[in-house]
Image (cartoon, rainbow, N blue to C red):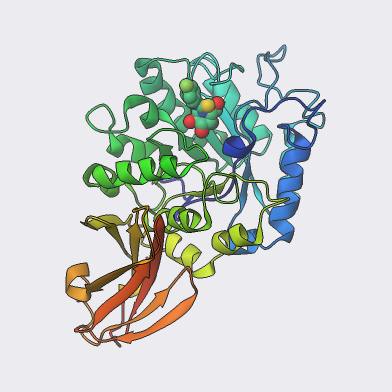
Length: 397
Ligand SMILES: OC[C@@H]1[C@H](O)[C@H](O)[C@@H](O)CN1C(=S)Nc1ccc(F)cc1
């Protein structure tokens, strides 16, 4: 969507995968979906280095609202869990130099049964969100059929634009239509949404991460061209820092989300997150790759018995290459490749190669040298290649 927003993938925090629909603030006040939870995450994002690295959106997901609309038919927050109101919460988040996102559902109810946005409340809801000074809307797709969605998602895009407030627009529409053409039209999506969920919800497991990566690889010929500045495929939240991924598997999710030009929405508890998880999530060079100004989504280029190789074209003749070992056996497995196999022959002088996640410079490589690495079971090596050429490139697009 050409609204000037999200020219690089959005980065921030979403409660859903970690905190779900926990509304029990009586017995679990520290983890229930409430203004306090959002404010404490905003505090952490501002004080623990997240904001400086680009993590700027602090968003709500399902279960924020009251069970009924107010007397004017407007959405309203749960009065016990959000006593100060949404505008005050947005103001707080803004006071921290962060942006605030909200959630609704194009249907009679949200997936968890809260009031949805219906065709006749789209304008009211867009106006409400703009009055609350919201910076992003995630519009889910439960409790409605395909024809309501086909009308509603474009209608909301127009309504948001009409408010005059820049509001990034995340559409779950394709996820409810199977995610692929012909039921999904990615040209239309690119015109009306800034990002879109097109596959199943991520869960806190290695299996879930692998499923998502495989779906994106198997369908890349349809998915990859759909992505670009202002319009992103969204493979769902980062679960790094939660319970289901090992350290090696956490690196896989981070590396592949960088290659895929994916939104980086953490869904973990920033109050207690481990140093290991922070080390992965705050990797500057990895974020540089994810935020590359060309916005070209990477692709799987090699599939062998033990390895998958993914490659992303970056600005200024640079490349990112991820070598993933999804085997579950034995020791770190050696992998040998070369620039011809990787299809990286643009710069005759060769490339500087960095191991991104280990933060190590591997050296200057001439085009005819082999590249030898080792990849742990359910692990990944992410390489950053910077050309040794002196050719001048176009300025940042
Ligand atoms: O309720 C909201 C929740 C999150 O926002 C996810 O990111 C959305 O993709 C939708 N969603 C959930 S749990 N959706 C859902 C998941 C499983 C199911 F059987 C019915 C609905």
